[in-house]
Image (cartoon, rainbow over all chains, first blue to last red; front, side):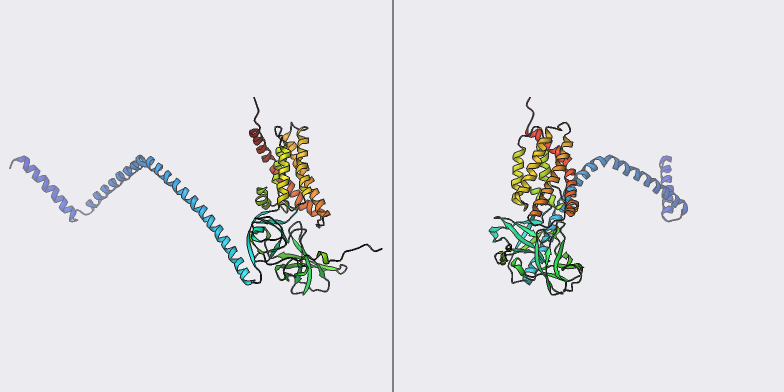
Length: 280
Length: 151
């Protein structure tokens, strides 16, 4: 064995011995310090490399992410549109279900459902336009209701649409019956859309919360359709009649679907009304 | 008219709302190059009379009155078109509402003048005036497009 190979053998033995001692734990704290330094160096190099890798690959990722983001945004928009459409259908279904319940609980009448498609262009008048007309057997004078109560009556009809005068119209008057007070009165509309009662007998005891129904007098509307409730009563001794303000059962600002009572024919009692002739 | 009936009439200020066909007709009639304002006014009367329950004479007087006023002012205050637009909208709306009030009262609709002025006419007037500027600009562009200058 020459001196060169002897030197190599000694180095291997020394290194191997150190490693054996280190692995067996004989070196203790010296070994832990050494390994922790190694780990720190490894961590530092690794983090720097990852940073560098991110820097190099980031532009490509941004393009990918932007594309993906655009796709997802389009998908979100589509889903939002679907959600709105479904929400609208749910609302419509709820309204129709309520109307079906109403028609089942009032089987004496036949109904035709119609959507509200417009309002009168003039702010002086309270009319709505519905998408049913003479092709659907809608006739002038037919009452229009919702599940909440009376809406008005058909004023004019064309083939596929009709105009409905609301009970809030200033020219509208409805003969009503106050259930608790057991008396009749007349409901008037106004230009502001409020409704009020007039011609209530001074002998009647009317209170806030009293239910108002159609009386059927005059032949313009069927009896017992709900209109609303009395809010306040004004009774002055020197006046012939009492007046009252009314909270309508129907929300006229949110009318979407209505029911036309098609088996009701209004009676025109004008020829029976006395004609005033000047006394000689 | 469809927009008026289905959209604009739902946007209320108190009990009043804007009259889109009225403002459009007024703005169109104020354009120098336009010579068809009477035709459009008549067409608006026809559609409005068809949809609305307002008596036809009121509708005719209202819309054609606006065209008449606009044509008269166009030749006099032509250097201040916006002033003319505001004048037509202001006086035209007042005229339209007062004639509506008078005719409907005459036909038996119970109105209180104070309620009509405070809750219907003034809010409608304000909304019409707000619409006047953008609609005037829009109609001016439309008139340039429909009636291009011949060189």
